[in-house]
Amino acid sequence: MFHRRHRRERILLPGESEGRRSFLKYGLAGAALLAVGGGTWLGTRRTRPSSGLSGAFTVLSPEEATVFLELSERLLPPRPGFPAPLDVDLPRRIDALLGLMPPEGQKEVRQLVGLFENALFGLLLDGQWKTFTASTNEQQDARIRSWQQSRLEVRRTGYRALKKIVYSSYYGARETWAAIGYPGPPPTGGMVEREPRFLPGTITEGASPSPLAPPPALPEVKP
View (tube, rainbow, N blue to C red):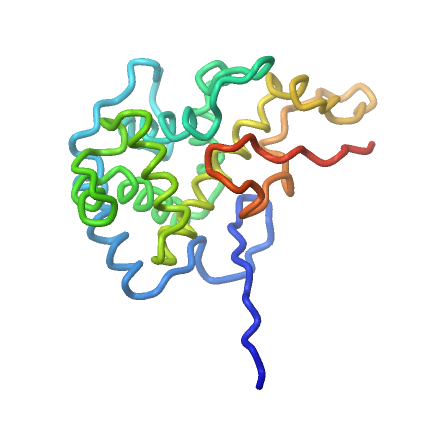
């Protein structure tokens, strides 16, 4: 008897090869959830933008940027030597990263953020009648774990996508390099060195056993 081999999901970011039709892979049920629960108006209509945000965004609305900020604060808890998400202006870095994606990818990420924030689906799927941003830290952690371990493919894949966007944007910031032991890009022979938009290949799906566990160590960078 032949056993079907499990196919590992891969979430693509700008600069990576497009290996499938869509940024997210989901069935009809997942598509319906994104379309209904992740609509921008329905998904974030009760979200209060964070006072820590500044200026306008290119892709995200202030409400969506707030969802990313609060998610980042749960995925990146305070640790000695590591800057806080707002210290590296993480919402704006995420917005810039999403700006490099094709329009269909941007739309799916925004729908995903709306579904993640949605209070109605929080009640139906997690038993929490609150938006993610209006929840306590413990409730936010529970929702993150629920997405990570969900039986619905769109939520499991969505969790990995959101986590990878957050980690790639955060560890691409110059302010985090000393904490992770990254010496920076090699000399460019007099040319101006720029921050990478993200460090490709550093975060893989399922790399840490818990959504709140410290991120995996980054690979050694060779010139």
